[in-house]
Structures are given as C-alpha cells and as structure tokens.
Image (cartoon, rainbow over all chains, first blue to last red; front, side):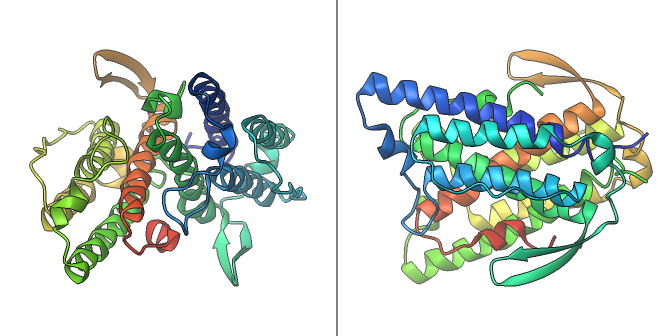
Length: 168
Length: 168
C-alpha cells in the first residue's frame, strides 16, 4: 500500500494553501473592522531581517509550486512577486493551487528516487525525490505558512490553530 | 516503491527535533552572551493567548511522540510538562527522540488505513493512519516547531532557516 508521492505532496500543499486563503480573508476582515491599513499587516514581520507577511505567502506558494513542477518534471511557471494586498495574495494562492491541479497523480508517482538538482540561493544541492519532498519541500512549506500565521497572530488577528490545520 | 509510513514519520520527526535541540543551544548561548535571563526567552510568546516557547517545544515533542505511539500501536508514554530552562527542554527533546527510536519500521509500516480515534481538546476525531500523519501530525508538528523558531527570532536570537531545515 504505502503512501504515494502524489498523496504526500499535491493534496497536502493544496489543503494548507486553502487554509491560508481563508486566513487571509479573516485578516482582511480584521483590518476592516479595526480600521487599520491592511498593508500594515501584509508588510509586517517578526524581526527586521525576516520576510514580511506577503513574502512568507509568496515563498510558501513557490515552495509548493516548485516541488510539484520538479517532481512531475514539468515547467515551473514563474510567478512574479508583486502582491501587496490580501486580495492579491489570495489570487497568488489560487494561481498556485490551479497550477498544482494541472498535474495528475501519475506524473508525480514514482519520483521517489528521481535525481534533482535544486538551487538554494548561491548553492546547488543534489537530492532524490522523496528526500527533497519529505526533508525540504514540506518542512520549508510549513515553515513559511506557520510564520505567516504567526505574524498575523502577533498583530492581533483572531485565529486559532484549526484555521491552520483545517479539514484534515 | 512509494513512501512507507515509517519513512514519512519517525526520521522526519527526529530530524527536526535534532534541529530544534541545536537551536536551543544557540538560544542558550545567545542568552549568556547578552546577559539576559534565559527564562525570559523560554517564557516568551508572540501574543498573550499563544503558547510560550517552552510549551511550543513540549507540544512539538508530544505531537511526534503521540503520532509514533498511535501508528505503532504501543503505549504513548506520558511526559510531564515541567521544563523551563533550555537544558530541560533539550532533555525533553532527547527523551522524545529516544522513544521514537525504540519503534521499528515494521511497527509503523502498514498503518495507512489503521482506524484511529484522536482526542483533540474536548472532541474526538476518527482518522485513518495516513490521513492522521499527513493531514494532522506533520503539519501540527511543523507548526509548533516553526513557531518556537519564530519566538526566538522575534527576540533577537541569531538563527537562519537552515537551522530549522538542517541536513535533509
């Protein structure tokens, strides 16, 4: 039986991306109710040299998109990092989900041992498909998704962990 | 081929727990260098109704421990939440890793469809093994691990994402 590479990737990314989209809606509603500029929230960060909220969302999206593209061996579409508003960030998430949904299970399955060369900033690393997915892509994706959540919570947006975990 | 339930769980939990242990050492060294009370850091939180750092570590540990125990069908040892110092929290992580290492791959493998009843606060949910691992245990584990990291970064501890991701 076991877990297929598809089961461990696409539906997991999509589930958390949908949860993030719903979190963005709550953050937008919070900004409106409190009459604060939403750009203060999307530009917020936990420390000066950490990514702002918008960049956390963009990076979570790109981690998911890149993992699916690499494992499936299809072109990784470039999504420019131009979003500032919650609506724009929600559209970025939806664009990412739409890309992931173009990939069929059969394109991902069997990629456990696939040799991948991944550029991480200035260096290149060689990973096999399963190692890349479980050891890098998923932890990195959840890292940026959780940090986005943490930034909003730190700024008083009323969220609970079930907003992050969603419907399992 | 596919991914076994063991491959998707035990080594992933252990890898991030080891990274967290190394992060604790850096935070301890930071506190000493800056002459700040380490308990200020272990008691820090991002918002008044969020868990403090120590509780984030304890919850990450218990998520990993509980997942392994449930999937393997072995007793889930109770670890009391008594830790306050970085050294105590590191010992908690080491105790968690030691428990996970007692479980053999054959005890976890094949648990994809295993029926589990999980208590989440006041409610009980029914999940199958794979759904529980991929949809709840791993995201929840990374959520608390990343939030622990975020608390330290927010308090000026010099860490980078590679401390969180570690050796894939």
